[in-house]
Amino acid sequence: MTGPGTDPRATAAGAGPTPTRRGTELALLAFAVVITLAAQCIVDLTVTDSLSPELATFGTWYTVLWVVAHVVVRRFAPYADPLLLPCVAVLMGLGLTMIHRLDIAGDQLGGNSSGEDAPVQLLWATVGLALFVAVVVVVRDHRVLARFAYTLALVGLVLLAIPAVLPNSEINGAKLWIRVAGFSIQPGEFAKICLVVFFAAYLVDKRDVLALASRKVAGLELPRGRDLGPVLLAWVASILVLVFERDLGSSLLLFGIFVVMLYVATERASWLVIGVLLFSGGAYVAYQVFGHVRVRVDTWLDPFAYVDTGGYQIVQSLFSLGTGGLFGAGLGGGRPDQVPVAKSDFIASAIGEELGLFGLVAVIVLYLVLVERGLRTSLVVRDGFGKLLAAGLSFAVAWQVFVVLGGVTGLLPLTGLTTPFLAYGGSSLVANFGLVALLVRISDAARRPVAPPPTTPPRLTDAPTEVVRP
Image 1 (cartoon, one colour):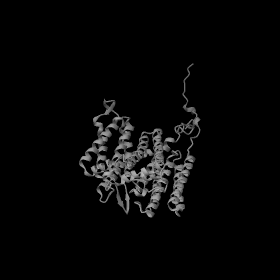
Image 2: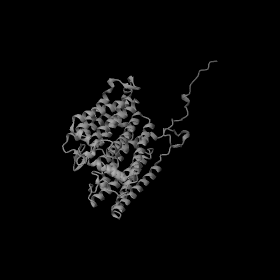
Image 3: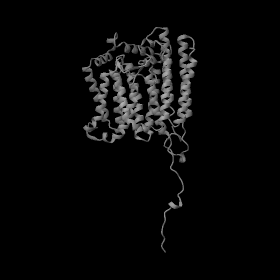
Image 4: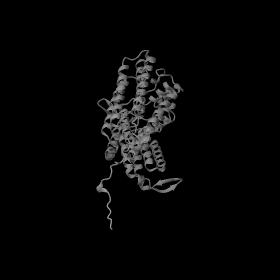
């Protein structure tokens, strides 16, 4: 892309005004709404041979959500990246469509899905939008968050620890949830954002020390032994999450985010090698010592041997993906409801069955665009904290998608994480709206043109004096 608006650091002198691209964002959001409504109509006509009477209400509500989001960005972050919101809109719309499709299947066909969860998910989307608006309006400068880094670190650790100590926090073998007023909340989704902010602030302060090398081994510049403390603490925290909360996903997610942000801050590939070795060693010890970890891994290695117990989900998911083939059975044409918990943990297998491999790859491409725009923001933003924060938030989305899809396809053991914006789950949806709001705020700062220095003529009193002697 070329033009006067491609260099956000261009000054007004000689380059002309930088376009905000809000019109592009509005057009893409309208296209996302059209795609969502068309998908809803196809599901209704395929499964019930008629349009749902709630379709008009849903369409109006969904449209208003993105109109509000666009107006807020246009007013408070006019230079933000124009592709962030449209990517989220398409992903969330496709997720709502699939949840609605599973609602119908559960009511009419007696599958594993039941309940009217699509309206609930739309309510959670409204709550998420409220958080998005609050972050964009209140956090006018992302650098302010660095002042509260250690407070956010404490909040994040507390949110991670709560499910491990509370009773009745286990769902599907992982202790990730707390129950409040009849709702199940996954505090780890919010802990993720708090810890990423802390990691960014900490690494900006310590990156010069952490980048120092002691010796070079096999082409890798190894850090000094005394500088291993932060990565060891992150490793211990991730192993504790794996052992006490029985969740490989959150453990791998948090440790992976820290190690990658450490690599981005120091540009030392040795940190990646050390991180992989530490986590692999800790996971192996946990497999040998703790029975529930061993059961999870054994079920992952051979799910068909445990098809009557813990392997049933992944076996059904693999059959669902195989049924979809390249082009899928069409929206409403498959039986994704045969997969347990298809609305949340296994919504990717439902999409793979009805939209096929091509449709699932298209969803992954949307995530790639979202992540790429976040990483582009981290390259362009001027301050070190903003660079690390944007990179960490972007990698958090990419890593979570990889871990979830890895579990659905059998590449990794199953986790309790959900696919961002796509899967049913209020905690994940609300937290990820907050994540995108931070990316919007950082991208606005990155793309905003720098004001040229004032060009006022010098005053007579400022002119140098010279004594001329005859």
